[in-house]
Length: 113
Image (cartoon, rainbow, N blue to C red; front, side, top):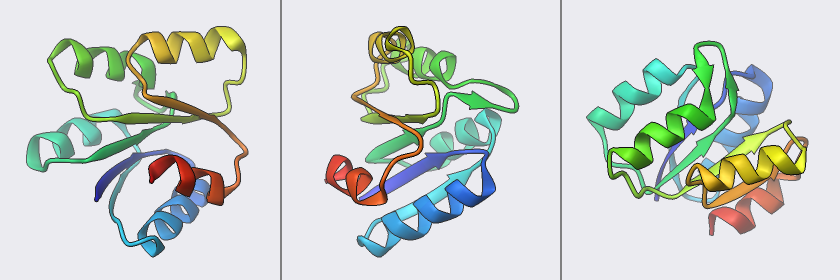
């Protein structure tokens, strides 16, 4: 599976990329939404792992734009935003799953599978 990881935290991004890659997936990691847009134009992804708070915008707005354009790529939100209202907003924006940081990497593996 080819996965796009959109995460601006260096330590978490590196850990997620290494872990998901060790499960046999190809992972492209970007830290900004502008780079995510460029990656999506250049490649087809089977899954997007999306942080919500990024240096150049909100991940939920990025997700809404993707869904409005007809993109049905599965999206798992990875975020520290743990309020029920945040979860509802993410799922209503089109996320397929929502995982609150900090999370165990084995739980991410189960959700990716």
